[in-house]
Image (tube, rainbow, N blue to C red; front, side, top):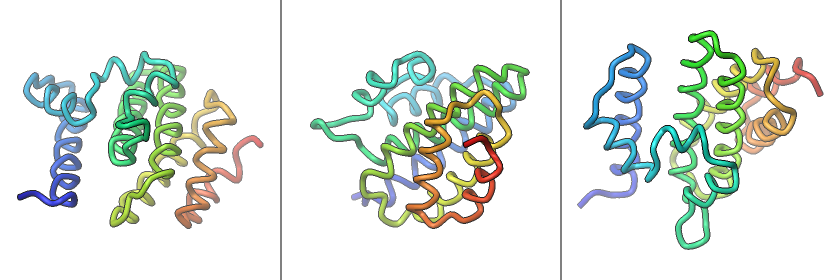
Length: 164
């Protein structure tokens, strides 16, 4: 029987494979379907849904699933970085904002043993946001709150130089 930790580690590995293949420009229908099953949404929905609809898609029994929200945040950050590499800074900024929202929702729940993973994600997201001029102030504030909550001083330093 898989424990919650085993389940989470499996999806971390799955997401890593997915992002690596996407970054290399490869498509893998089976892998796309597994990620879609894990998040219970397609990548296009992550990019296209309004924030309220996305929040409802990450919820079960009227509460956001913090693990799915964290996975969605990681995916949005990674796809945003791909969009930035494609020379699409506005699309990247939107995805960084989406990652910040999903992170905020994830931190409202119990992420238990994922402290190191969350801290690394917050630092990566802070770095992306600090370098992106188009990201809105609400996203910056969400990441700041997450950095404070998680004790990520490096992320706070990255965001300190961004607009207030």
